[in-house]
Image (cartoon, rainbow, N blue to C red; front, side):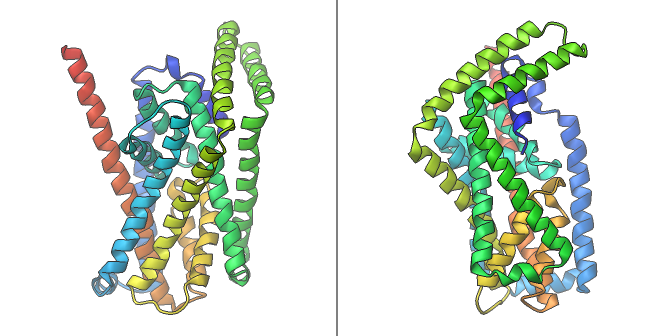
Length: 368
């Protein structure tokens, strides 16, 4: 996630036309195709590398415990749900109550576009678009995204620490390359968490940087009339300051937002445990849970759509240290299928329904 990108988008929300609110759909379509190709190649490579056929996996899936699979599916659904609750908690504190289904739609948009674009910023314009449709001001949207951004990083770092506490030896079983990914993930998310806190606690510092940036754009003749941008920035920052001032004193809101992000990350990691059980895995799941914590930290920071390939690599490398290789591939494919591919499908369907409703509403408005 890029805080500077978030603020740049939100600073212009009142000037964005409906066509621009589509979040540059041509680029999104290109990345969707790229993501699909990456997914197909990754699945093929995993099957090829494992030595098992598609029929072998389908046979194992047919013998799986449906109860555990349903629990994994519930966790997948909960992954979307908990982020939506986090976003609703923040906007409601700012005085803009929304229904629970709107929160699910915000989260689905974030999940879907983040999965098909090369960085976590991919989903933020989708949240902005839907919140704007609900009449939420740009300054409130900015504050909401920054606060949720902080909670997001808290959730990731929390389970990174949990992974070390549960089974510290797991980290050293990884190859050097994987350990670099994991450590880099810790460093990146800790840095982003600090930047997020600065957005809340050091608003004037951010304001001065933005003012200098506008001046630079004027100096190199990208913008002709910087005064308009200065006035706009001052207005947005004043609104943002007011909004942050409202939520800053609500410790309960901060706690709930962080808790929802922790629960969201727990739901994602728990899919692996349920997949393991569904396929007949026995014994302690402590090391498996720790392994998935490390895989999540190492993969999430890589700027590849949905961390496709990287996440699979980290999962397999960790799993083969805990179970037979053939079984490890089966667990990886079922877990990834539920936590990522099924999640994209559910998010995409939710997003499509949300856009169809908006289109229908606009059509009705024009006909009146």
